[in-house]
Image 1 (cartoon, helix red, strand yellow):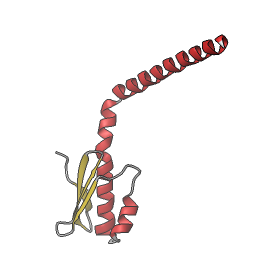
Image 2 (image 1 turned 90 degrees about the horizontal axis):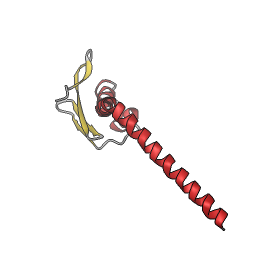
Image 3 (image 1 turned 90 degrees about the vertical axis):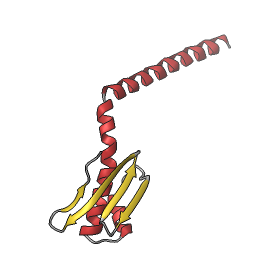
Length: 114
């Protein structure tokens, strides 16, 4: 029984230190790459908005087809189409993006971020 307790204590210490080391490495990775990680978030909603805009207004496909075309692994929080202004508004990961249809030659463009 003493042998088991000693083995269990050693194992729990090893797992505890391993867990702390993994957390420290992940924290270091995040702080080292913080700007790149924060810059990535707006690109998800922008990609969805521009892809959907091109699919819907240029290719003239159905809404369901265009959602499937622009779909990503990250969930979209909100989505709105303004057909009169030919504007797509998308929100994902707390960031929003708008794409608007210019014409057949130019296609769709993203509105500048504020």
